[in-house]
Length: 496
Image (cartoon, rainbow, N blue to C red; front, side):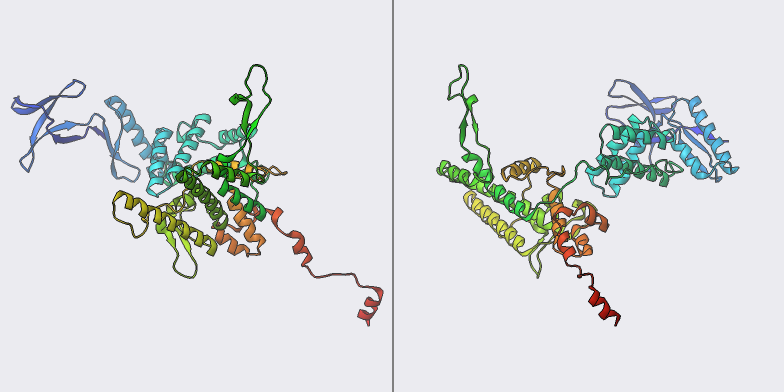
């Protein structure tokens, strides 16, 4: 027969408490912050200090579990009658396990069934944090599961089922959610349910048999690779556009009504194009000749943007990975320069060494030398110690947070369409597609290209990150051996 009790504890005497004698015992009296009066017995400790003895507000249950061992479980009940009902339920469950009617795993799952989904998510979040998971990914996983809990009515673990989840996926597909996003929700749900099964919160994964959507059929955001000519145009525009923005000509429109021809509403700036950007730069230099400091800042901004694009295309780094690189992660000594990518900033959390082509390494080295010269000049002006080198934590390249918006404007100025005739898009991640495509076009073996892209499967490199439009399929076919049909004379000679 189990028993109920409330745990006792001791704590230091609260500040402002008064100690008096009552019925031969010392008691302490004090007021809480809300004004309530508390009284507790004072006890002597072995080290000579005095403390007050308190009692938990919640009941604990002690009973023998299904293995015959005495265990203690918190009932989370303040009322003794309610706590007795919880104890009765636990003892009955233990009897079913001892009789073989219920397995121990089913008993554990039944014990977790009364908890809300948010409580399990709290434990799941702590588990992912202990595994050093990305905070951004942990937040995303929690938000996805919380959305499923609200919209599929999964208030508790025993409410989770494949049927409502599949119906929700169908409804989202009809509402326009892409296959990749639906698969992301499925992956989040499966991972959470697998963790619940491993921690004996569930006996099985209810989402294990939910089918994945075919992303090859439904890919609304398909990226394309840039050609070599387009990359050269983009680099030129990125380098010149910050300065060229200050040299755009004014275009006056026809004034109508009572508006003056000089009114701001009657004129606008000429848009930048690949043909007029050089002239705009010259006009900007002339306009800003009396402000050399600002002129230098604009030129430096252009060089940095062009270097960002070039680094993305020649390394295959993702935007966040490039932004995470610091000076201390560069290795210029040795036959091949490379950057060491920390596991915490890589998508697969393994870390990698990223080789740098000689011309890119030279540009990065030149940029760091320029930064060091600027830091030394700043130290001289402020009377500080002249640094011998840049701090190891100095960012390698400044990657602006609005890079996607900046790229769109650079594409427009370079006369590069954002979407092609097949509705494929050019965005920041398309730089990585460009990297993989040009590796394949250069004849790099698939296994080598897979290692350069840091993909777990070669199918990703060959199918997702390779643009077939830029591959020389016709040239590959022409490289096949000639199979001309033999003439009658040739056939006779062969037969002889």
